[in-house]
Length: 95
Image (cartoon, rainbow, N blue to C red; front, side):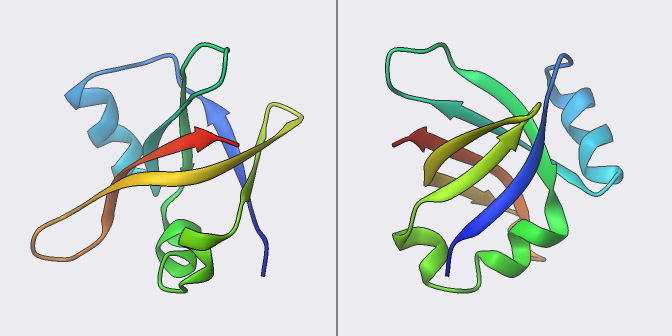
């Protein structure tokens, strides 16, 4: 089962910007690796939370659609809220 998420590049950084994203149903994430610069993105929280409950999310490549271009990544690190277990932040590495 291949996963695909739509993502937007973020221009705002910091605690306040991340809280605003989460309040609007998105989570901050970062894509790094390869010879390209790291890219800060925002993805839909509900889709990621549903997908991460399946083992294939961690084992298979994921496609991120960022501003019209497809990028193949794998999740490297995921932060969760300590009480609700909601995903708070995700680090993706390019494949």
